[in-house]
Length: 453
Ligand code: HEC
Ligand code: HEC
Ligand code: HEC
Ligand code: HEC
Image (cartoon, rainbow, N blue to C red; front, top):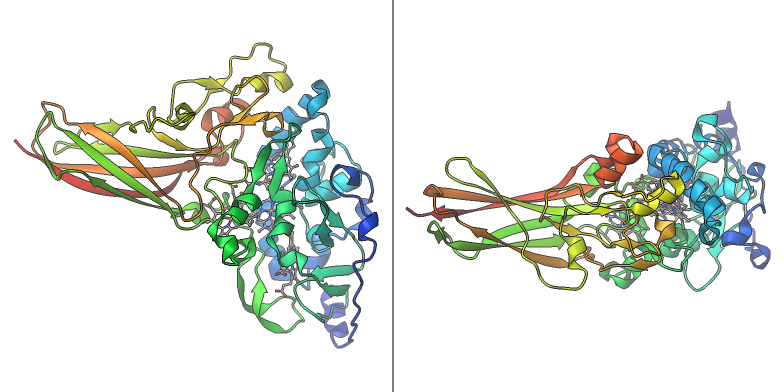
């Protein structure tokens, strides 16, 4: 039915350019709460059923369509954030504010908290077509904390001049094509004024921004196809992939690894130093980025001797400040989860949950008491930023002390870089489904030395 309407009207030339009028009057960020109605926005099914079928299908399997409904968001928002907001006046604003990015429609409609995902309300539409395509700019010095200017209505912003649609008016917008647009949700400050998400800022400081490579080039890649079923072919149509940490294929190979020894032959009792070079060849920001409080990336090195015995090598300390957070330890953390969960003097759970002595690439977040936290909104300070920057190479060394009884022959030493979206002990404690804490192998590489008699 809708298809018919689309095709029938394709011939009609409606060229209307709505001016970005009214920008000044539009409230942004926290002030936008309750300034709109759900009905001001169109449903993704309307956009996607007959006209933008491909984009709709791409979007519906990307995290962008699940920002509100995804299991881990539901747990973090309803079990931790909402109860915490009721107990601590400093973080009270998050009860509404989380959805400024996760379900902008619900936020702007003043629906706080929105119905649970199981209720299938319009809050479930998450970051939908009409949210993005009616954003006209942002207010402030930097894009962050949903300071986008939302102007829902007949006019949809897109990349092209004179695109004709039977459904709506189109307007060419430079803003949607800029990284700052993404930054309105991909940069975040906690109520304590700490940057707890800075994907856009990391990008801006890195080599890709300087060379004009934007978020879109890697997450909305351009190809020759149609942008609407009844439209014409273009050489550079933006795919709505938004693939990131939830696409193992995107994560795999992000970092290239090479390991080499300082000597090729050793005798029992000798010390051999192995160096691992880790080169970030794929991300436009740091790795990990985004929800850095949850993510863990670690380097595991193992040797296997001629008889198949396995030795675990622990990383050599470099001696920088805060390094203890970057080496896997047998330590408890995340005690502040006890506040929203009503567990007085909660001892916490294991900080890392990975083999002791492995190198961790992370940025630790600290609560007001100075304990490591994964409640990003409760972050009062940050620790050492030991993540791998775009096109950065980090070197790590591991010393193998060959035991006196090691058999002669080949010793194979393998470095493996692993990634987990959510630290396992936290995932287990909160009952977050396993896919969130599955181990994704980013890369590995092996080298060999000979053990002499
Ligand atoms: C997270 C924000 C976001 C969401 C969600 C989103 N889009 Fe887009 N869309 C963009 C951006 C950014 C561009 C490219 C803008 C540019 O390059 O200037 C774009 C481009 C487009 C284009 C023009 C493509 C071209 O190259 O001609 C169409 C049509 C479109 N989107 C439709 C949709 C539909 C339909 C949905 C929902 C199924 C959707 N978008 C969801 C951000 C979004
Ligand atoms: C040169 C390519 C490139 C550019 C440019 C780039 N990214 Fe990425 N991005 C990646 C790769 C590869 C990954 C997967 C590895 C990872 O999770 O960091 C990724 C991951 C992500 C993730 C998932 C992070 C997580 O842990 O959940 C988000 C969100 C993201 N990018 C947003 C952005 C935004 C916003 C921009 C622009 C400011 C941007 N990216 C620019 C390549 C790029
Ligand atoms: C209105 C807010 C908003 C805007 C604008 C926005 N995003 Fe997002 N994006 C989100 C939220 C919220 C998530 C988190 C989904 C989740 O994991 O719950 C997300 C997730 C993603 C992911 C997936 C990460 C993963 O874990 O797989 C990528 C990639 C991404 N965004 C890229 C972009 C790019 C590129 C742009 C700009 C073209 C953009 N986003 C604009 C809110 C936004
Ligand atoms: C400024 C926008 C913004 C605000 C405010 C915000 N988020 Fe997010 N959130 C994002 C983006 C963007 C991502 C995706 C980053 C990434 O891919 O690592 C994300 C990711 C997440 C994730 C991880 C999803 C996953 O599957 O790994 C959870 C859980 C989450 N947010 C919950 C919350 C809660 C709870 C709040 C309120 C306390 C909140 N967010 C506030 C933008 C925001």
